[in-house]
Length: 310
Ligand SMILES: CC(=O)N[C@@H]([C@@H](O)[C@H](O)[C@H](O)CO)[C@@H](O)CC(=O)C(=O)O
Image (cartoon, rainbow, N blue to C red; front, side, top):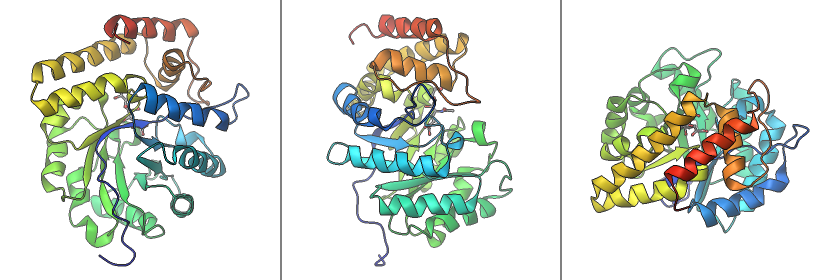
């Protein structure tokens, strides 16, 4: 390994919560909720790693300055409490992504992740890899993850093609956050992955299928409030208790299908988190609309009926 290689962190495994960004009632970022949020995740949900400023964190609706302030606060408050803080630094502009990547290195983030730019979309795996490389180059000591979420970005380059020889371009490459439904592509990523990579799954409703395919862990929004249950799903899977693992996965599916029928989007998800956690994370920022209280309450009631034990 070169002198610039990332420090040997524990391989990222298990559940990672994709955090919501706390806002005040005036719509400004609210740093005072970050400490209690981290305590809630570790103490009530058994979550020890977080993915900040991602989709759930409304990164694309935040300014670069806000993203830096948030990333710094997440890292500061997670110190000594969380295993890893992965800061998503992807932007439409390469320059902004580079600025955030180099900032993440300065503030002691454990890793960075980059989504494909989606206004001007990379047309091939090679173009996408070049974009990712240019970002990774400014933070060569940080483990680097590619963040694939085709339903949001519209960039559907097979991830397996992105992985081909990627360490020649990005020596700090450490894995993928795969938030897509194509389990064949996902399986091929796992099959090609190197022992020091983490291939993480990001569609919470079908995690069990991804575990069967060899997922090393998962990143998702629902682990903010259902991590304690999904941790049991993973444990059951690891023990070979597929009946128990399926029971929990089916409960998560029942919850999400109920929520979807009521119109589940990021605004609803955030309000559900407020209801279930007691934290004050506020409403989302436009263009995501706030959720009517009754809607989130109904989903929270469904959650409690599905998971009466908590
Ligand atoms: C489109 C979307 O928001 N997907 C979520 C899922 O956790 C999703 O909320 C869940 O599977 C329910 O549909 C994550 O993949 C997003 C994520 O990890 C992130 O916020 O970066």
